[in-house]
Length: 277
Image (cartoon, rainbow, N blue to C red; front, side):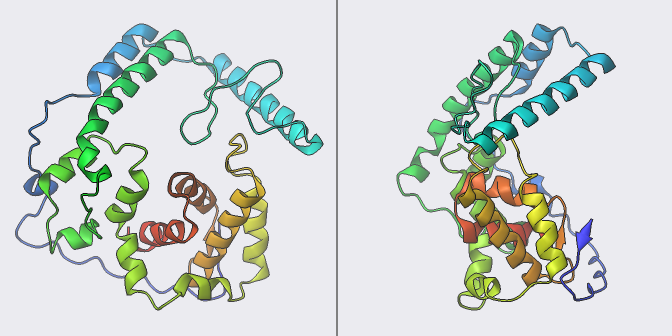
C-alpha cells in the first residue's frame, strides 16, 4: 500500500483527447540497413529443447520451499559475517548475471538459450560503436518530446532491438527525459529535497522495505546500496507528497540503481516513471 507524506493527492487530470491525425510509433520507425535478426528463433529453440514442459504444482511448491531455505541460509551467513558477497552457497557457487542476481538451477536448455541470446547481443552491440566513440545522444527521447522533435530513425531501430548493458545508463536517461527534467528543475532540487523532513510513517515503511528488497542480490545488499535507495525513496516522497511512498517503489528504485549507479539520476528516472506515465 501507499503511505502519503501528508498532503492529499490532487484529483487525476482528465486525459487529453487524442489528435485527429495519427502519430503512431509506426510513423516514427525508419528501417535499419543492418541485417535483420530476431529473438523468436532463440525462444522457439529454447521451448523445443525444454519440450515445452509445463511446471507442476508440486514442482512450484518445491521451488518456493527451496527459495525460502536459501534466503534463510543467506541471511544467517550475512548475520554471522560468513557471507563474502560472492553469492557462495552451501557447497556451491551460483553464477551471477550482469546486475548481481544469482542464476540458479539452470538446465541445459536454459544455458543454451542464454548463450544464443548473448551471441545475438554481442552482434547487435557492434552497431552501437559510434555512440561509444562520442556520437551524442539526444537529451530527451521521451514520448512527450518526440511529438515535437522526432528522433533519428536508425537510433529508434537500435533501441528496439536492445541496448547494450554498457550504454544502458546513457540511453535510459535520454529515453526517459530524466536529464531534461533535471535541467528544468530548480537548482540543486534533489539536494534540497533530501534536507526536508518527511513523516515518520513514510520513513518507517521505507526502512521496513529496504531489507526486503532483492534479498539475494549482493550488490544491492550493502550499506551503500540500502542507504542510497533510502535517500531516493524519501526524496520522492517529499517531491510528490500526494503519493508519498508505495510498496513496490523499492524494487523499481533498486533496479534503477543497479543499472545507472547514479543516485540523482535514479531519482529523476523515477520521477519520469511515476509522474509522467
